[in-house]
Image (cartoon, rainbow over all chains, first blue to last red; front, side, top):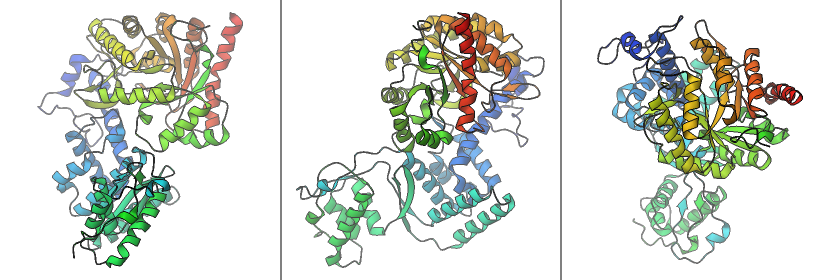
Length: 292
Length: 281
């Protein structure tokens, strides 16, 4: 569907050049106040207002990075290419990262930063209402399988980013919530400064778990080894294989590895990140496959 | 005694829509509310806070599901994933009946997220009724369809909106969710007498009634659910329950949502009309 005009009116021509007035008149009755075109336009405007508002709500971080006007134009272009294919508006932004990768002109010159933000904002949606399965209980960790396989909670999202967009998004939201008290111009100025400051930083790997605790979503920075370990678990690797992958390029002394993995398990189990599955005992994890 | 064959729940009384800004108040204060209507799609998810809140609500209150995207009038068959998720939610809520709109809104798997008006033709009625039957057979639960507010009419229409609604529900053998605010909005937009509508629908099929507020613009009225119910709509409600008897009634308030008390008090105004018909009978 064609976006509205700059004046938020329905386009007067179809994509193939037909008069929208004539098209509308063919199937919609006018009344004593509105032409066929105007009656159709009510629906056309509601459609765009509704779906643009949904994207605006879900991607405030991206909006802050590219700016309000460009964000609106970007969203319209995205929705023309990727209209909703779901019964729920919740999924409207599911293809935004994919689409932006093939349309980087919308996010230049901050493409990497913008893509990081979109990935984070989508991960937050997934973490908010993704499935949760019964978490591991301490007894599961003491079971006897020498090389168990666990699964991560479906809602847990793992992200390797290049910019600290987690901090940026939290700051942007703080600015937005404070904008009710301060002038809009001041909060816009704050947001612009924050984005500029982050964009000037040299890209550096940030490893993030987007998780849920007590039904609230949190961003948790994790070590690169932890990221690799969790990613391997998600791919279905056994604990020992995941540990080998996690530390194969690490300079952590081998004598400390078991303790690190046990600490991870203890902490992540407390957070409920592991699903009830096969039994596990970190003491049985073999690290002999580690590469030097 | 049920008021009609499609309404075995006359004791439901007056409810309100369950909305996020009221979650905390409802859970902490546990106000006396006859029932809550939920938007099904908001809870057709895999987990997280919305379902957690819903489960707590279900422990204390009766909940009825109301959908916004089944699109009985759309040309394609019902989406299987949608149906599966909806059925899972029906099992969770134990909703005694389920409602959605008499409209279309999707084409070839692309969704408008709007409630688009139907062309009132016999062919459309047959198609829509067949789809309602399919959905009901899958969900194994009574279904009532809601008349939508509209801003456009089609040249091809062969009957009035209320004749179309009647044709569909008779063919589908289903109930009606009669939205008297929608009738009022459409009557102003299309220049018909809203009482003709209320007086013409098959009263024995009305399973539920919606009341709501709307917004008036220069050349049309928009169904915004962001105001109190106006007197002409209350009059339509009064006439509707004169015809249907006591019927589960729900106030919709979806935008600029005021406090829980304000919404609930607005809804409870319906009770005075229910009392009047009780006295009259």
